[in-house]
Image (tube, rainbow, N blue to C red; front, side, top):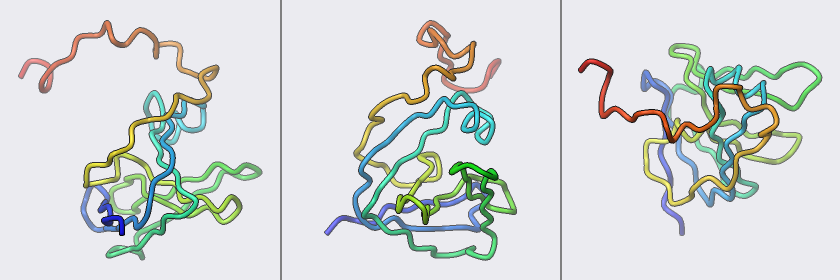
Length: 136
């Protein structure tokens, strides 16, 4: 039996466990994922067999679905953190990688929607890496 993977929102009000295997991990660069993360890409894990168990804060979870699309996002209404959701249409469990508290043994399978990549999201290995905040 696989050990549950724990996760939570930033404020800690919502807590959950993923039971089962996470099958794939994609970094999506589409415009919608960039908009809903405010970043270069979304980092989401997917499973057709794992289950999601809410441990606390279930009443704080909201899901936004972009009309006429399959694009959706669940989040904590207190802190705004992205949270997992089970997509009824596809049968997929979608888990934002940053919402997990436990380490995972899967690495990203691929960058997807690369044609939609932000114009500044190239050659980032040349950008300096700081151990902490700038000036700290």
